[in-house]
Image (cartoon, rainbow, N blue to C red; front, side, top):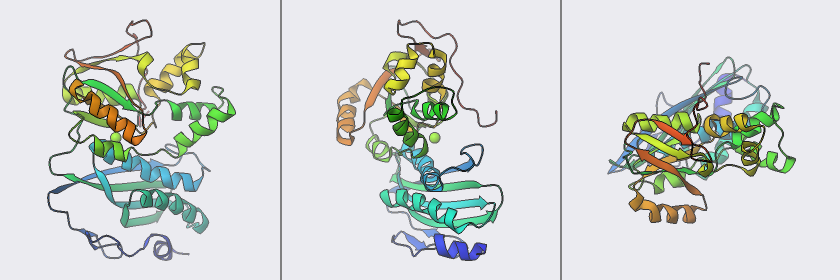
Length: 322
Ligand SMILES: [Mg+2]
C-alpha cells in the first residue's frame, strides 16, 4: 500500500461537525469558530526511543499520542474539538497503523474530537499531533495567574508512570497487582479534560504535569513571579511509592514523585475562597484534588519533608535534550 492509499484507508473521513466547513482531503481544513468562543492550539511530538519504546503496543501508543495533547488543552481549560495528525513510519505497515488508529480514534470518540488533517511520510517512527480546543473568550487558564496565599492542588496521583517505567526496567520492584495499574497509567494516561473545563473561573493558574512536579510547578511560579511551599507528605501517590519513600529507596521515590514525568495530572492554584467549589468539583468528577501547599511571595519552590524540613536538593525535571 502506498502513502495515499494508507491515508485514504485510515485517516480520511467525512466531517461530522458543522464547525468544519472543509475537512480532510483538501490542502487545508476550514473551521468556523462558534460565537463568543476562542480556539486554543497545542502541538506535541513523540519520537520512538525517546518518548516511547521500540516495539511498544501500537494501540496504546495511538491513545497516548492523542492523550498528551488533550492534556495540554485540559490544562488551558479548553474543550478539545479538532486534531491534526502527522506521522513518520519506517514502512507502510497496515496492521500497525490500524492498531495505532484504533487507540487514537477510541480516545478521540470519547471526547468527540475530530481528525481534520494529517500527513504521513517514510522515516524513523515519529508522531506529531496538533490539537485545537475551544473555550469562552477570555476564560483560558494560564500559568501566570497564581497569587501569594493561593492553595496549590494536584489531581489524581503523581509518580505512577515513573514507578511503572522503573519497574519495567528492573530498577525497582513492585507487586504484580500494583504494576498492572501503574503500567496502564504510563501507557494510557487519561487527560483531565472535564477537570480543566470545570476549573475555568475557579483556578488562578494551571498546567499539566508532564515533566515532573518540581519542574512544571516551577513554570507556574516563574510565570506568576511567586514561590510555593509544598508538603512532601501531602503529595498524592501510589501506596507502592509511599512505602519506598519511607525506606531504603527514598532517593528513587523522591525522583519518581517529584520529577518522574508522564503523569498528565493537572497542577493548579486557587484562592482559599474556592476551597468548597474545588471539593465539589473533585466529588462530581470522582477525582481526588489534593491541596499540597501554598503560593508564597518569596520566589522559591520549597518542598518540606515529613518533619517540615526543606529538602536541600530537589530532583530535576525530565529534560527533553539531556
Ligand atoms: Mg503541558
